[in-house]
Length: 124
Image (tube, rainbow, N blue to C red; front, side, top):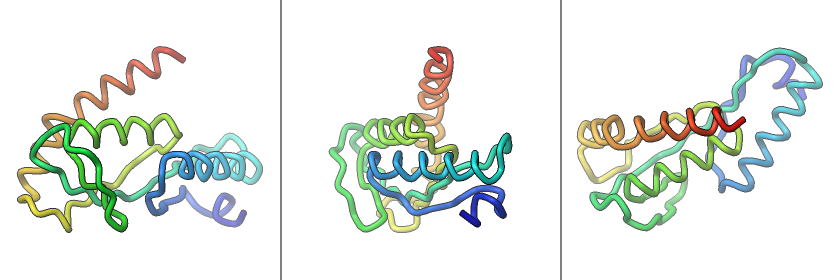
């Protein structure tokens, strides 16, 4: 796979968790084969529309996840468990003010995601 040999990483589109986990596994196998010992991250974009209620059920829209912050956190934890190294969040299509959503992500999601990641790493 030329991408694994010639790139610094791979940025791809969002997919369901199972399919994304399969893509990560294929990527990691290609990196191991073509660039052994080199870390090349798997990155994906994710448009989110954060609902005001934290437990708002997810409703997928083309390339967009509309949900509450608790559901978005669970999805991000799933991506982390699948091996996704970085997620580029985009608020472009959301109905809420982007600055408010960014502040909410920083306050409600990032600290909990960091705690979750630390716990997962401690279990390994």
